[in-house]
Image (cartoon, helix red, strand yellow):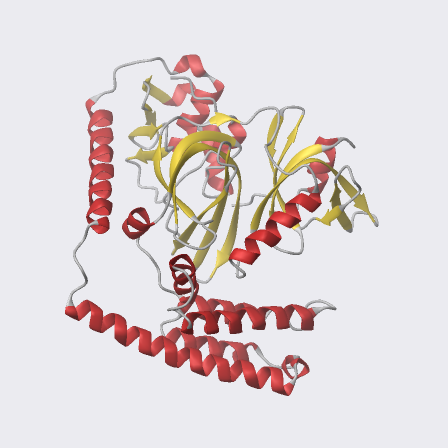
Length: 444
């Protein structure tokens, strides 16, 4: 019944900086009464403008509070977690009150219903005539949109990439809108991202040509649906924009039970909302997993993770030729802190060889989890150039922030680094130094 999260891990759950600050203030015993804890949850009543009932399920870190806040976790939930982490004796073992047991019972029933729906999907009936007609109509629309994209790509290459140097953003947006109308939303996103490449770096023509080539490869792969294996067909359809529901993923994807290292998280602004990427690594399976979540109109993300911890859980991977994206199916333990060492690559060459192998299976992958053992952060050119070097002297550049913190934690010695690799630079997620894991580069 002992929660082992640190204050930093709890505050990393906060949806924004103001919630984190308010959560700290609410980790004070004078604000709480009727506190308790058992193997499943912690709970208490917090005195604010009213007396709020707060509970937290320990395995999933799912919170609920009857305060009016739309943020999840709210400041009262964060305060309860902070109280358990900093003043454990203030939250005694106890039998949960009815308002806690009823909530846990509802959650268990909801989980059972989801599992039942997934099983029905697995053995479900064949699609109806109307469903087949709708699918065929969309397929025809997408193919027409891809024909237009191929013509646009051919014109770009024939006219020369120099012709796009002075093009406004609307040049890219028009083509993206055509793909959106063609019901290929994933391609719409890829084309809009191209607008940021011209003139952004000295080697921008090479980068743009690489992205255009990936687009052309994708359109050709889609037209060869009968030739690739079923995994590649699934992958290509997803990359075009055929989304799967959680039930479909549960029914068709591979499920892996493991003790997952929760290495870190990246939150970025996206169109009309935010994107959250949480990176995990299986300690037995030695496979990476990416939990991708989206938030629109300031809605909270559905899954919460104790960053810098490990947890036994079942993950179900999206079907594909190189399964990487995953969703949490079941959590079997509470999160516990990472200690001592990270499992990972002994040198940079081995990591890059693994990336090359992954791209051989799925050439459209654009991010990878890098767990690099015994690398040393190096600062040069008065702080303008940052790299990490392995024992063999090979180096990779760093992007993002928190590099001075990384340098201070390393103290000139090799450390184990968790980072996100985008093909050009590493974005640090966390560092294991002196047996303690510290999160890096995460902003709300």
